[in-house]
Amino acid sequence: MPRQQQPARPARRRSYDQFCATARALDSVGDRWTLLIVRELLAGPRRYTDLHADLPGVSTDVLASRLKDMEQGGLAVRRRLPPPAAASVYELTERGRGLLPVLTALAAWGAPALGERRPTDAVRAHWFALPLLRALDGLTQAGILEVRLPEGDFHIRTGADGEGGEVYGYGPVDRPDACLVLGAEVALELGRGACTLAEAVGDGRAEVLGEGPLAVELRGGRCART
Image (tube, rainbow, N blue to C red; front, top):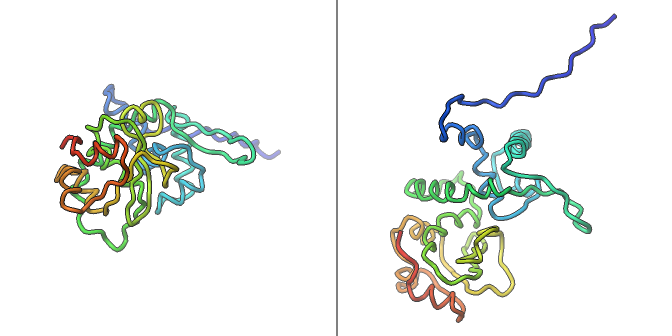
């Protein structure tokens, strides 16, 4: 009689096994690609195929594995959209959204390493949101700022509009409160704190469109240098 095959045991996630908050955090997000998936989901719910398209270089197996780990770790959930969409999307939980300051700090720390773009470097417009969030942190006016780069458009929620939900999102929006037009290099300079938005607007390297309170504040240079 053939020996009955035992069901495979689920693989145990690796742990540093250290009673340390940093080690525990890395148990959850220290694997390759996990924080970049968080970066994508900070902009809102996304389908698996969209995540794969905006994470060049990740294999389908690794992406599926990381998403499963994030669900088990309470960082993300998968839900079904109602008709007519009828598609499944992944979105961050409140705990997952709590990683925004971590990603913003990492972007600030890594910005000096972004010199000349390499021929092998992929780029997406919304990847510039995290550096810009640091530069716009001093804004007091709540609203939606549409950012237009040669690489594409995305939008940022400023002030109170950014509380409790997605702080930035993909693509343009209808009737933004202001528009910011600039190049990638200027966006990175702003993120590094090498210049203020008022300075970039003043020397013509950035342009603010709109006449509402948010646009006025952006032109007035009330964004604090960080």
